[in-house]
Length: 296
Image (cartoon, rainbow, N blue to C red; front, side):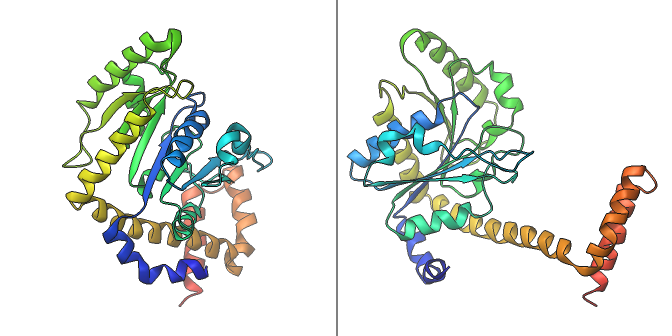
């Protein structure tokens, strides 16, 4: 917490100089996210960058546990002195990121990491909250990721600044080229998030490392364009406000559940709702009324 408070006075300075770069990464299971981060991270450290990887693992809805095995899938990067890998459980949080991911980003930047990669648990209807805490959001897809309409349905494409087709090597090169063409066509019909940047689709191979240098050049181009147009700073400022409201929402729910009047009536109302004696909305109204009255 002390580091976070110390960074408050320095926040405006860091926003103006743009010394760090936050990269969000999401994609369906099997897209090769961990293998990509391993190859991409090693390339960045070879270019004298310090890389922090914040990987979020899905938590079991039954036991609440997570494997947290990202380091085992990134053996070389985890041993790199210029890299730091931090796996975290999602704990059931929607958006694919944990409640403290944004603080972890600031903490990593405060300790000298100039590139922070945030990997989410996968693609879904609400798995792109990470876009609200990074400078660029990358969607990683495999060559056999389905047709272009399937990608649009998931909604994740709408917030992607760049689509990366992974595993473009060997017999999969024709399939990778086809899916690249499909996504280029699909993106033409998407509403632009930026006035100065048009989302791009690129092909890479985490196995052969083909396309990794070109990808970094594209990311650097994006950063340069966004900084020059001031959208980079504006986006970070808006994200700070979003982070604040996310904390308020999370903490309000905790305060609500710990309220003594709510705790007294909650089991009874839950039981009545399950039996169909009262509607969920009516039960919620009763609990909220009692909760609000404790502050009057």
